Image (cartoon, rainbow, N blue to C red; front, top):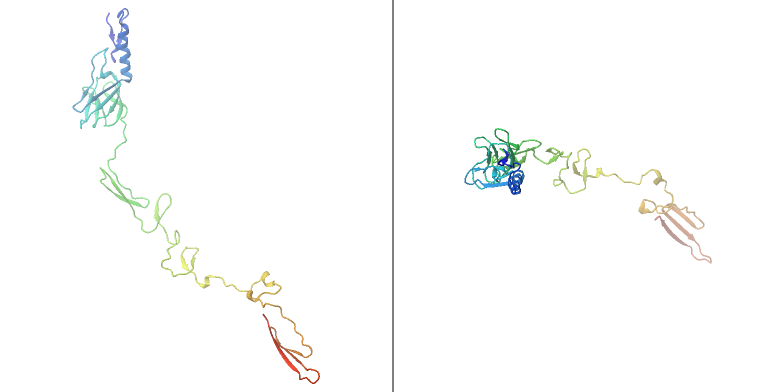
Length: 290
């Protein structure tokens, strides 16, 4: 009997008693190697000049249709077809060309794989379909700016190479709340500047935060008419601190001494006569408090 082959992958089915002395070669080339191609083998071809029809050279020998990975290369500039046998098989298609490629049967629709993308494609009994869709970052057809949260804007070239300009519909000083922006209120969110004020000491109004120049009435009046402990100070208080500098002395007139006036402006007069006919004399002292 003659060696037969499997229907899908074309692997050898040696018959008992056949291939005496040559079975190793048959097994290695028509089973082991072909299984290796079917599981992990790669076929590569350029699609620059036209479609790529996978080679399917028959059973027991290598071909492109049996490979697991198909890599399309080249610069066709237009979509190309990769035509595979219309039977049960899965392919991992890698499109390295500059245009889309379509993996299909000779008379089926197939599945398109975009340029620089990959897809896992399988036969479903009537056509090739995607088991895992082509990798893609998606496409954007147009771009616009939504006016919200205080922002607005415009877009140049919205369908090709968008240039976005953001603006705000709010005038004045802006404030944010973590979600949107709005107009800040003077006196509540900030204090107005001082460029229009005169030179002086600034004061702030508690309720509004407004800044003005302080006037004399804004400061407390300090005086010595205090109450409490300070009014009970004992001892001598210096004149520089509001005191008299001394306690009121008690002056007493004596022999030949007279006192006139009141403290701290008092006059002390001293009169006396000398013995032996000497004429008397008078001395006057003016006492003044410190």
